Amino acid sequence: MASITAPRLAALLGPWRGSGPAYAELAERIRLLALDGRILDGTRLPAERELAQALSLSRTTVAGAYARLRELRCLESVRGSGSYVSIPAAPAVAAPDEGGALDLSKAAMPAASVVGECFARAGAEIGALLGTSGYEPVGLPRLRVAVAEHFRRRGLPTEPEQVMVTSGVQSAIALLTRVLLSPGDRALVEQPTYPHAMDTLLAARARLGAIQVSAAGWDLEAAEAAFAAGPVLAYVMPDFHNPTAASMTVEGRERLARLAARHGTVLVADETTGLLDMSRGPLPPLAAHSSAAVTVGGLSKLAWGGLRVGWIRAPRALIGRLAQVRTSLDLGTPVFEQLVAAELLAREGLLVAERRARLRAGLSALTGALAEHFPEWRVAEPDGGMALWLDCSPWSSSRLALAARAYGVALTAGPRFGLHGAFEHRLRLPFTSPPDDLRAAVAALRTAADSGRSAPAPSPLVTV
Image (tube, rainbow, N blue to C red; front, side, top):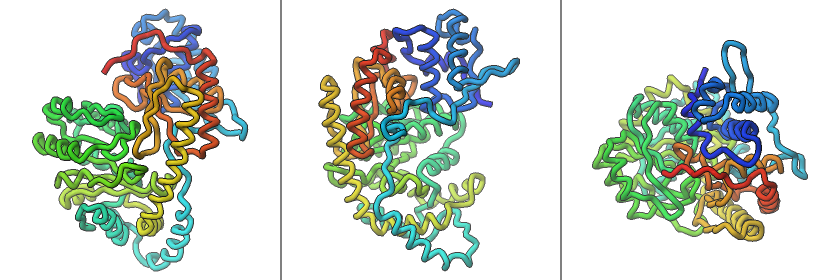
């Protein structure tokens, strides 16, 4: 059973104190850590005395916080064993007008219009494969050819033998981590970064360093020191970075490739959002600047999150190593979904055009609503991607996320995307929902911000 130490929990809590009773504020912040995944369901919390000492609180305050969490069904205490995080099956949020939460915690869209047609075509084609074993550890040949062609269209010569099909991008990251990293190895991630990639590297017990990135771009000059420490792997998202939506310049890609080559670091470029371009124009993949770079991608953002198909593009030798290790995790991606993916890649241009139109409409609605309800926030429109990365000062994003739940809006607080509790004054707002939902969510967020429950935190922010 997983557990978390008192110092680690104290670091995750960040500036949690507010204007309400200390026990209630502490309980709410611990609940948020569980709801957004920073503390996993079933994790054992520190003993009351240990946490009280780490936070310089009385044991009575911590005991009150734990009691409040038990009332909220977020904590289960077992005599002689400890207290364990328990996330309720039904989220404790008020129901908005249509009876469900306005979920801005996920940057995801419903299925594209051609997805149903591609499922139907795959259904008509599956019969020809029913006479085979159905096990395709590296992927269905037809889909590997389609993925190779996807890269060729973008100016990156690729052979099918350089491609492995996976059960989504997250599966690809996990497999690469298992093959490339050993416990204690150094790895780099962007700061901020995609939370689940960071979680995977931490689970592998890698020692993480940071490459600072903002909407203005990557600080590669400062990254020189991080690479000099000899990281085995560097995970980056160069095209419409999650959460900042930044796009790396050609010069930046060249410099990053040189840095990695100089220090023997494997670059893993995540292209999950790479084709969600609204105004930048195409740029060559990062792997075009480094023959040793590894690319992961998939169809979850371009087509539908319910289609769990991704891929890895890598040198042939690495694909062989990945195939050997993969059988300890799974025996391949379902064949039917691979047929659907091949059909979708044949319609890539249609998918890109449809997503571009939807994202532009969402971005327009979101920026308009923010200008109306939060004129004090500066909003820079990105060239692509799926979300805004806002400075929500003077509010704490954790407090906003908690307060918004009471008004039927689910958000992810800024620290979920950073190392060591950073980005408390940052908030990611996806513009993937329908325009009316986005306008309603921002109006509700304004009400939550004015409610007093989300008053600015008096404690200083963590500086990184």
